[in-house]
Image (tube, rainbow over all chains, first blue to last red; front, top):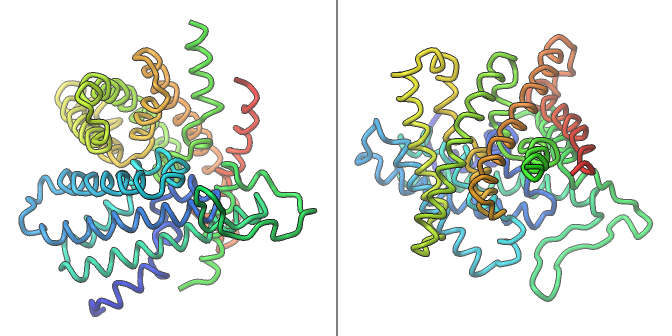
Length: 206
Length: 191
């Protein structure tokens, strides 16, 4: 297998898409996908941290001693999570509130530590950038897809973006007489819809 | 006293860390294939969560708050938890080898278990006192263990059943978790 930039980017989009194929990073996947908006917001924040930490880990890979590498990765990741947290608090405050403790919890997202250990520590900066970007986009798309299913069935809406004054998105897609499944926006719906999505991915195959 | 009992019940059942707050799902799916590993993981989580709950509470109240460093909470907590896990591992290996043999392989996994970090953050955001934080950490961890062991029991039975190919492994696991979560949902009205 040749290591090209496009190859590393594309594998994150389908073949190794984190929550659905690698079954990693499930907590944010389940917790924040009540709406499409939260899913995308969480995905973008995670992708930001993933890309930045991949670049820095790969740039410092010859300096970081092998024995304490995990501790170093965690500090690098925690620093970028703090950056993301402060940026979101400043610019996207409603999203910051609705994601709550799941923003600081990006630090323990196993996708990020997993990529630092399995990829960035062994490869060059450009390859790690492509890998992080691919995984980040794949993660965002899966969260958005799961969010779309749950919000559509659970609330009959599709919210793309909420500002302080207006909501961008589609309301009452199935018409006003549709009775939403409250089940879907609660915890059980999250588990069941992710399980069915995994099943769908297995059916479609590589 | 009754306040603490209500808090404990709400943390174990109504706000179950796995099934209602969605924290700690990776070890939930990863270590639930066998009953033994599920029990080992639950014990390790209870042990570390209580210690981490105490230490992060102290870090927040005595160090971060007085110096106005709340924005460093993420970095501080993850460092405290990571070093705590390392320390506990070394301590057990040296002093209580029997317990180490039981919990050993699960300890390194715990650093990236979002339940531990999540519980520490939940204690802070709920503004608990020291005793409340202690009770809540313990109760959340017991809730984690309860859900994990229940789930492992169900999953051992699924291994014997014929499952359609695309649904195998994680997929059927998640759907089962959804059904157990629905059962826990019934506790909503309790507290």
